[in-house]
Image 1 (tube, rainbow, N blue to C red):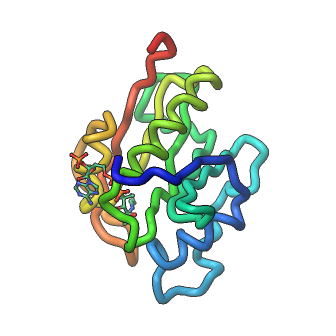
Image 2: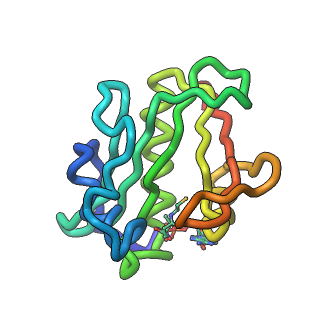
Length: 153
Ligand SMILES: CC(C)(COP(=O)(O)OP(=O)(O)OC[C@H]1O[C@@H](n2cnc3c(N)ncnc32)[C@H](O)[C@@H]1OP(=O)(O)O)[C@@H](O)C(=O)NCCC(=O)NCCS
């Protein structure tokens, strides 16, 4: 980890737009940052701050994927770190923190639709790709990836 003055906390859906917009929906209207389920009581959003500036976000939706037998699943969405702050370990720290929170919720499995360019990032964080790539309109090829959580560790 190449950063020192960072902290992580739970944030609101609206807070995530400051990072979702430039990183995941560049050039699109701000409304494209609103994800279905963002405001559900079971949805959690997290932000990583560098010197009090929000620089990375991710969200977890209680959304079971029928591909997987586990009962307690969360879907990871909107994983993004500002371009100027990428490659410094912030994304990894954010996911590590979220794993701890999700274990407290007794989560068994996290899954996501990973952009092809981010597959190696997720692999480094314990996720495995499942099956063949598929296309998401206007964004490109994606892989379903999953990570099993062990509540004992
Ligand atoms: C993908 C993303 C969230 C990673 O966050 P980050 O803070 O840049 O990643 P980290 O610095 O924590 O990287 C952790 C590890 O993953 C690797 N990694 C990071 N991004 C990677 C990428 N796109 N491809 C391959 N490896 C990557 C890093 O090299 C690092 O490995 P190391 O510890 O061996 O050096 C960030 O780069 C991003 O926002 N990208 C654009 C948006 C995006 O694609 N989001 C994913 C949508 S599914």
